[in-house]
Length: 564
Image 1 (cartoon, rainbow, N blue to C red):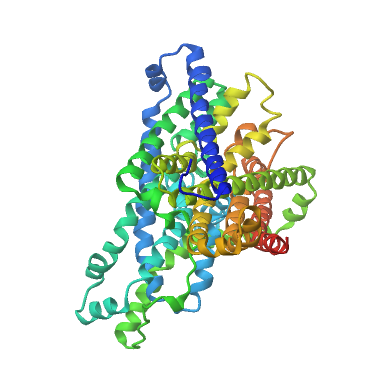
Image 2: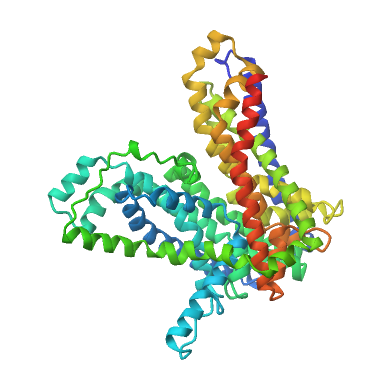
């Protein structure tokens, strides 16, 4: 297949990677066909009539509205905050602050919803403080609804944007900073002359990605939407199967969502080249901020203007406290109560924990294996000159991005419709959950592994050849240890995402099969908020434990591989 590659193992791996890609895309296309055949076609319903009956226009309007508002608010806050963090990077609080923003990105959505309710709810910290100040004369705003969903989305999207934009601002040459001050640039002029040209390339693709994540949101909308007025297509798909058991409705809505998201990804990939080439968007957790590498020098002229600017900068950072840090610490503080001991005695908790850990390890192991295979195939194809290289690269890229086009709830719906014709879907719910988690983690795993893998393959090709390192010997002696950090990060993200996912288990969760996120949702729905807080704390501990321990686990495996 690759004519100018002499190493047969590389050829076989690339062929295998392309084969896996074709299987993934073929299976996805088949699922979409089954969605129509068994969902809509089997009931001989007119598709246009389905659109009218299922208030699709209203759903799309509400989903698009909250996604646009979430993007706008997140970006408008992220730009000045990132600029301030870059300007004040010498503060001692900068490294832990930036690290905490990374932890928020792997925080389970169910846990975040519990924390937001604890802070912003009718009985939350801010509501109690407001009642005390106003002496109970003015009521607190109900968190459930559009504003609650936007707040929850900003909780996740703001750290993502900050971790993408801050390294860009930090990379400005110090000469440009000094010249702007010498010419007396105002804050607005500084943004338009220096900052906007640097971020405008990534701004569009970043906002489109955030829009897609908000538009296809499930867990946060389910828990904070407050009813059918604020919903998304994924929530409607869940309701169609879980409550109405309307396969036609679920299939029609799934196909509509796939068509809309696929069109957006197609336009972005082929016209803006944003999602496919901008790895920074997929690597917000992997930015290594070594302050010694940044030439932007801190200005410490302690005069009246310095103090005023310092106060302004601190005030701009206040949204981080109310939107991100208070809910984060609320989960920790509210979880330590008598309910914690009570929850630990539940038999259902330990059964759910066992299911959660088992599914997380199966999902992450499969995602890492497939991710490495696809990343290695892309690296080999990029280094070759055969005729169909660009076609196969695009094919692999499409399979990596398939999750954005087919979110977990849609994938679960398709598998549910297909498998119910041949087997007991409830008995196979764990398999559906594993497959959906693999699709969820695959884009992030590939984006983390690929840059380092390409560097290892391109820089040391002659050295490998001279030392006779090929095949398994090269993999265990060089490739695996060389990907030590990247594999640890990828495994940690995959484990964190798999542990905290609520989407598919919401379709198949029952008394016989539960996970911790589903148990939190059920407990909170029964007005057991204290028990839900304790469960949220335990899930947060499990998530962070796996996220941090994955690095040590991979390091241990790599050290053993060198000895082999």
